Amino acid sequence: MLHERVSEPLGHVIPHPASTGAAPQADDPRIDLKELIQVIRRRRKSILWTAAVPVLLALAYGLLATPLYTASTQDPDRPARPAHCDQRGDA
Image (cartoon, rainbow, N blue to C red):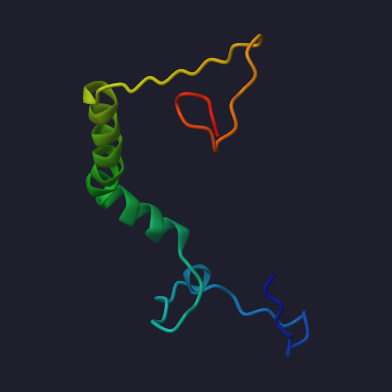
């Protein structure tokens, strides 16, 4: 968490520039929500394409890739051979 020390008393609050009618300054660390929404609306095509391209590539891969199936069995009546045995069964 971000912990900051407050050097001014809580009764002294600086109003947001939008509420006073003044233009926001370049060094103002606050984010204007209306401006952020406008930027997102202006750039929505590039945002959507950036999200759509990986989804479309993954979908194409999923549809076109050759499926690989593997299976294994164990016979419960036959004990498993130790790894050091060869194909004939002798050590």
